[in-house]
Image 1 (cartoon, rainbow, N blue to C red):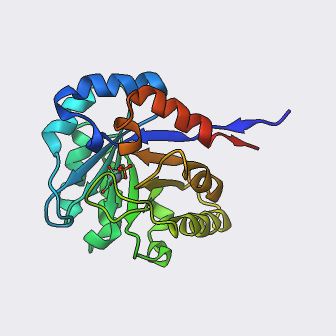
Image 2 (cartoon, rainbow, N blue to C red):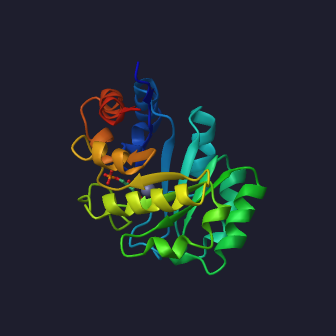
Amino acid sequence: MPDFRTIDIAPSILSADFARLAEEIKAVETGGAALLHVDVMDGHFVPNITVGLPVVKSLAQATKLPLDTHLMISDPGIYAEQFVRAGAQMVSVHVEADAHLHRTVNSIKAAGAKAGVVINPATPIESLNEILDFVDYVLIMSVNPGFGGQKFIPTAVDKVARLRRLIDQRGLPVRIEIDGGIDLNNIRRVVDAGAEIIVSGSAIFGANDPGNAVREMLEAGVQWV
Ligand code: DX5
Ligand code: ZN
């Protein structure tokens, strides 16, 4: 009998109603979310400002879901470790934002969290060559970071497939996450290309029933092996 592998759905609270955050989180927990994706923006690396350390601290108290914290901030090395202390189990930083990426990645791991690196749509996977051995996951952006509800950039599918090959060739235990414009129409394609952690904001929190939206995405992303 064929076996199946499920993917991890990481709802991005950026598209949630912040005034009803606890309720929104309950809904996606019930729907089967594996992680909670928290977008931290500084108004400098990206042209938008969102939440920071105090919110991560409160979220860590409010949910059992691991917090997957995506830092869209300049010089993330200054803050990365503080996000782990605030309760994030996963912290990712952009390669474009950090001149001392290796140091930052190691500081995240030393503080006790999984460390990820993120690349923008125009950043080649070759930029990951030297850091790949040191990270737990790579986040491929399938939109330009800064806002929820943007249109999926289809070349991200091939980028995921090329990264998957690189990781497998090198025999590394690195997971691939994808973020931006993922919905029921394209989830299958990114999973088939090799993405295992799927971030989705507007397609989940923009739905009438966010819990059901998570369930539908899980079903659509199941992989028979
Ligand atoms: C964009 C953020 C994403 C965003 C995804 O800069 O990193 O996590 O919330 O939202 P959707 O799924 O609506 O593109
Ligand atoms: Zn994100």
